[in-house]
Image 1: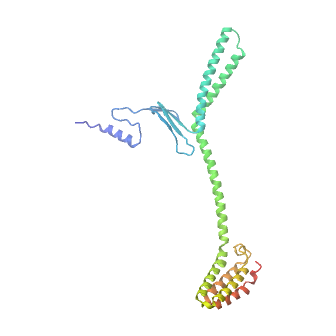
Image 2: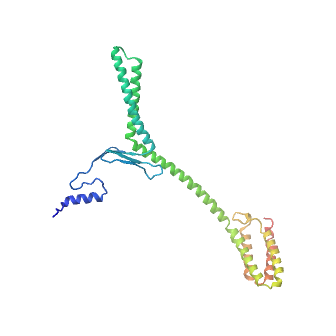
Image 3: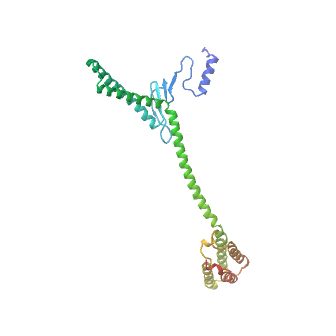
Length: 284
């Protein structure tokens, strides 16, 4: 019969699997080790895989693995620095070979250093210092990149804040205009709609032989009423017409619609409202 693995081994395996580790210590085997030389570089058995692109809009960070090295490219600037580092290594090697050749020639001549040797020493020193600076930046690049990300986020938040401010101003203007139309709608538009509805009902109920006379009289007084109402701007909340006059007109039309039930009485009352109660509105 098969032997049951020891309880300690099974517990260790289960805990490793639950923690999501892909390098768990399995019975009879050893887990690969990884050592992080840099925050964006991991050495160990990482396997060979293609460039993995991030789902962020910029496409970074990107991860690439080859054999025993896994590199995380944090940003386009990071990629540029890594390429610059390798180019610097090549240039440093070339300058070193050139410097060694000039030094060998100087030893053969048993003389002092010429201008070519001094230029080679200066060139090698400049490239070596530049390479050292690039190396230091690469070592601390994650901290620098964090600052850059924060700066980008601040710029994005500032832009979003400006957009929100613009939307707020637009909404404020829109609702201010909407509020300015409340009195126009309440005291001018709604009463006239009720009046039109009442006149239509009376015309439908009137005898057919009186239809043309009634509709001609209604059109005449409605046209006169429209001419005396004044401009729409005057009926706004901030318009030239007083709120008391707006309320008086609305009450007069509502009273006409509710109390008068004969077509002739409605026209007579409409004539009274138009000629007597609206004289001050003609100039608006």
